[in-house]
Length: 201
Image 1: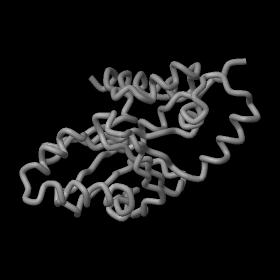
Image 2: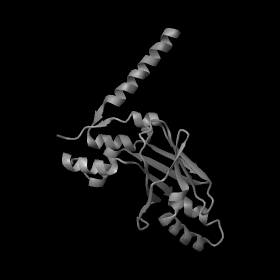
Image 3: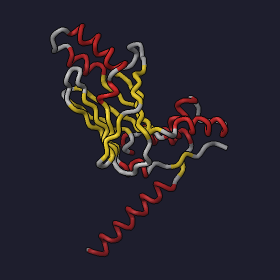
Image 4: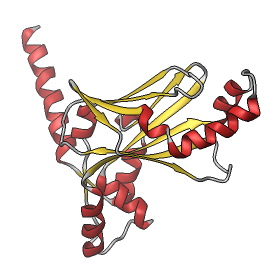
């Protein structure tokens, strides 16, 4: 039994090392990052409202910014250098769920109007990241305008990058309407296992 357990540990260790060392072409890299099975896209349902969080590696973010899988190296480097000082995420709050929750409250129209102002200007103070024993304040919280075309409220989120290797605990407490604390965890191992990006050419 001891030999079998040792074998299993060795196999798992090999798989982790193999995952860390492999490279993916741009399109496959983006697919990997967005696949919930790989732990970089996480979700939670709190008091009937669905929340999702997408961790955005810098390589991934550059491709989104350029809207291309084929980017000249000098442009890629310039964009990479622009983003690398922050750890980036996209945070979504399901619109239908949030509206259903608000509809149960008094002064529905007034709350909806004040919620828009809250999302645009004041949500940042209610977001933080726990890294081990440290609390990291939110450095960027920008509400993305969708003109009501998307089924969620979307926020570009950024925290100072400390090159931390452990789990990230993303915390959001909507104090505007008291929806309860939301915790979304991106495992440090999922980030460490991220394949390298292999650019074309």
